[in-house]
Image (cartoon, rainbow, N blue to C red):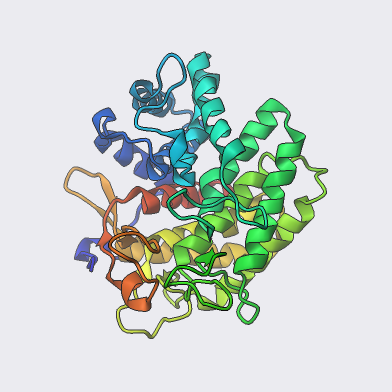
Length: 375
């Protein structure tokens, strides 16, 4: 397990931590390391937002350099295969719109159209929600809403596809109704409509635990979808209600130090730990809900700032060169597959905990930027 170093404790990180972290990322992340993957897309997306906020055109040039070798003149995407029907491969497409606006190169729009083509033919459960991947048939994973939703919503806005918005919002609502636990208001990680997976309850089809990052993905997905959803869309109010319900449900599980645990409701379970990515995601979501006027809850901002303090005091460090590093990040967590991931507490607690993983760094940058904008 990752152990925070002594240098992480009680430092003065300055007023523009999002900028400092983005600078550290752009220094050490080179184009040879770029992969077409959701977490790479996430951290580049976060750096592009910092670029916009602080007028850093060098970050925009860096983002272009990362995508340039990945996108062919015909809009093809290196290493991407539509036939995998993998929702994880959609999220990196979010940055294609910004790259097109910056460069006016049609290949970026053509690549976005290729990804939309996948969504147009993505297999679905009987109730109309996308399978997470073709290799995970009949399965809804909570994080899948983030992997495709914000890209899909921006594509619909850019193309004027009003019917597409109806499908996006319907899926958000159906995922909520399918995965929600009535007692706690929290959302389970996944659902198997076929009941064929060992991790799925034979009666409900649900996985057994509330994984923090999965819930964080879902909250961020709704917020980012709302950025593009028409203000008069008939489902907009329902999406806002769902978001606020989930955020309110996670608040009682926040640790006194500000962070949340890997499995939210099992703080005392042996092996559970305060996890960075979900804590940053909740901080971002709480702050953005307030900034965008979706919530007037004073505690949302207070709890979010406590989470950022917890992250900085526990897992953030600066190296001898002045670069920032963020630890305490669950490397990966999934269900099924080979070797088989059974969704037990032991499984979630035993996946590697690492430093500088983009699934934690990206949301941390986003949360810090929201905090800076709130000030």
